[in-house]
Length: 321
Image 1 (cartoon, one colour):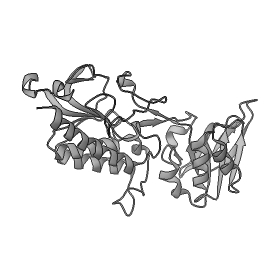
Image 2 (cartoon, rainbow, N blue to C red):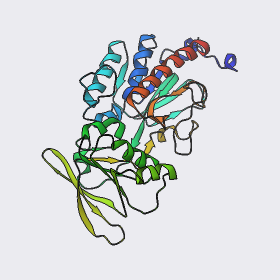
Image 3 (cartoon, rainbow, N blue to C red):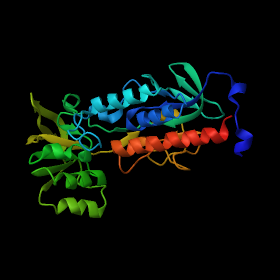
Image 4 (cartoon, rainbow, N blue to C red):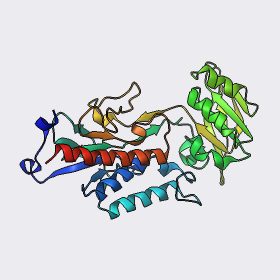
């Protein structure tokens, strides 16, 4: 099968890239670093909001090599600079679509078409936000979507968790390691969480569960988050609750719409690996949160980016002359 599909770059012209990386963040930049050091001359379309979700994280303390911690945006810029030093070319533009029906593959960016033998998708997943008043201003200043990333910043403080699924119950339980009190807010009285996860939160003395409550407005001062106005969706009545931290756990949406269903995904839209980091399409690889439904950490995304680049290098050796 592979022998029949081997391409000759000479027959296709000089404008075919070995690999195009779509998306940035820890997975994309690490893939770019490894691909560049392998002399693949990778081209990355990082998107208008390059850097991924860590661009909204004020401090990162759990990435190896930073004993004093580092700001999320600063770390992303350092990863980018390191990859660019070895030859990664980065364009801060969004990919509109791809054509994976034949090789070389086509990547369309603002109406311009680029040809490539291989693709690494590292577009990540977007956290679903509430959209409540004052939310934009407090992202990264008290409001987070990752308890594992930011929970330790709220030692002996009162925090909120919003959601009704396993993630919300798990994050609430995790946060009791640090916070003095965790209030779990859910807009209904029926939880999607598994029984074991719900009961674990319910039976934790440091967790208070409030049902029929949703965030209407976030409250803050010059130092950051101070609490929220919460609303009962049944009658619209409101009250206030104090908190210096809040964790929104209502899900993520993988950024895959530009693929237009050409790569196999699961029921939620996350890309599925078929062989190592390769997708259901030969020569198309994926890394980071666009694949990962479990860990969602910068370090695991970076590791998968490394794997994807190494898989691309091997695949090109076997399939492109």
